[in-house]
Amino acid sequence: MHTYSSDSKERTVVLLIIALLSVGLAFLYHGIGFTMPWWIESPSLLTLFGILVWLHDHHVWKVRLFSQIPNLNGTWFGEIKSSYDNFNTPYECMVTIHQTWSKMQVQLKTKTSNSDSIMAVLNVEPGPQQGLTYEYINQPRGDAVKSMEIHRGVVSLKQSNDCKMLDGNYYTGRGRQNNGTMLMYLISKEYLYFDQARNSFNSREN
Image 1 (cartoon, rainbow, N blue to C red):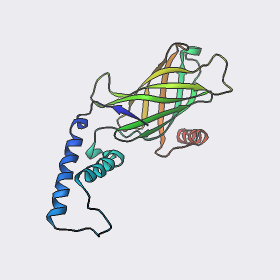
Image 2 (image 1 turned 45 degrees about the horizontal axis):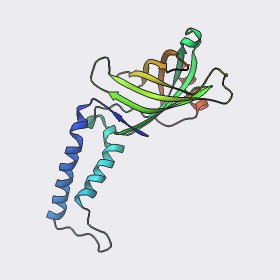
Image 3 (image 1 turned 180 degrees about the vertical axis):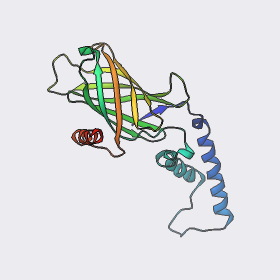
Image 4 (image 1 turned 30 degrees about the vertical axis):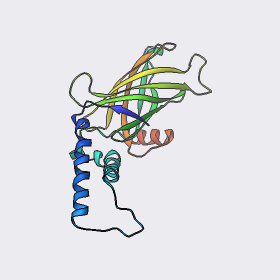
């Protein structure tokens, strides 16, 4: 996974709060006179800080009470329409998002290609920049048409208020020079295979 930026104000204060909590826990630990067994080293301030940072990065931030940043983890399924064929054909696609408070990986799969994000921004403040924007590298499958080639692109998506739908646009770089629309629905918080995601998506519609 790679790091991602956000305009959430918590990015400027969370580490300070964790540092203060670490000091408080260290003070409490030594204040009550608790001693560890001889074969376990007493936790240092940096150790406590590291543990709290890890807990927040992987778990605590997912509780909406403690974080503004949307939790987009899971498997999303929907369709892409492309300028390649004048937006006439919807193409099935699956997006898998792996996310912690500080890192993210967005993987998109279709029948003809796979793409992986290399950088991302997840903004929460209302306005034109709100939502998920990421740059990706796309690699065609071996059985894709010859006109497809490895290329870079950018996706801009906005999540619904309940974080169960992503809607937006994409465009590709030099070589492909296509653009299109994307509409994705959250199928599962688990990570599914393409056929599993399609079946869940079709069951949802019926």
